[in-house]
Image 1 (cartoon, rainbow, N blue to C red):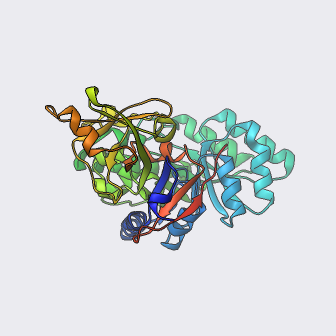
Image 2: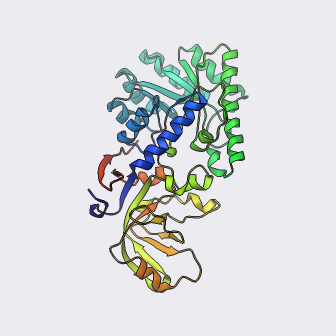
Image 3: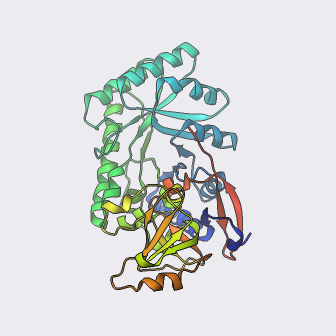
Amino acid sequence: MKLEQIETPAALIDVARMQKNIARMQACMNTLGVAFRPHVKTTKCIDVVRAQIAAGARGITVSTLKEAEAFFAAGIHDILYAVSMAPSKLPRALALRRQGCDLKLVVDNPNAASALAAFGDQHGETFEVWIEVDTDGHRSGITPEEDTLLEVGRILHENGVKVGGVMTHAGSSYELDTPAALAALAEQERAGCVRAAQRLREAGIACPAVSVGSTPTALAAAQLNGVTEVRAGVYVLFDLVMHNVGVCALDDIALSVLATVIGHQADKGWAILDAGWMAMSRDRGTSKQSHDFGYGQPCLLNGTLLPGYVVSGANQEHGILSSTEAGTQVDDIVERFPIGMKLRILPNHACATGAQFPEYHAVAPDGNSVEWRRFHGW
């Protein structure tokens, strides 16, 4: 199917860009001498993940048990569920394990560790559990020097639970925008996670895996001594937030939303699109960065950027395209963007925008596309 034939709004993946992004990250990990476990929450798409595995990825990271179930059903066994385990979800995790899934769970507090150990004992299951480490104060985890780290490790170890490793995520990297700052945070992330593993090992608790990662720190790391694997997700498609962070160019962004011009407000200098926040998502991550892209950066159908224009506003099903340059004649918007014209809009946050659609249209270099399904739910 050609782009002109696709109903709008629709999510497009530029396959050539995607493959280039996959190759870049895998080459970086190979050079650093670590395994790569991509975070599949960005796309939730088996076609994309097969491309990542074909390039050399070992296992996957998920953020929901629905993802774990769907990807296991598709033939992927080595899965890290990288969200602290809620006791109420343990029966689903048990079901996956008993079907043959090498599912690894995560905890970051003594109560969750105790509940998991008790559940495993009750059902005769030896779970593999990784401990989440906080290396930048961004979200969850136990800091490397906290007593709680060893407390959680002992609860698991002494109750027959396999402590498979430690993992961390330097989410604060999204707030940075210089190579030096990113490199410094990558080293902080590495050192903190390696230190946590060292403390557990010194306490007699095996800790084979040391897992770190975010797209910015993965691409900025100078060395990863002591790390066994890296996780990253958004790199496969990239987005405007990552462009502002400084880890990709605009023409590296593989995800866009296909939209149609459906009207004008000429006196305001607006072209109205059929892609509002239900298509682009409400994510306004670039509003806090050096360059605010509104709800997205418009491009021509062939991917050529339209500098000086932005999707400046969005209602549920209406997007507002306007000029960012002072002195633009209001009539220019009508002439440049006629009714029925189709555009591609680069998103702020690939994970959030992708989540608005049940499928992607994977666009080949010749302009033809095929449909790739994506998973929904928790």
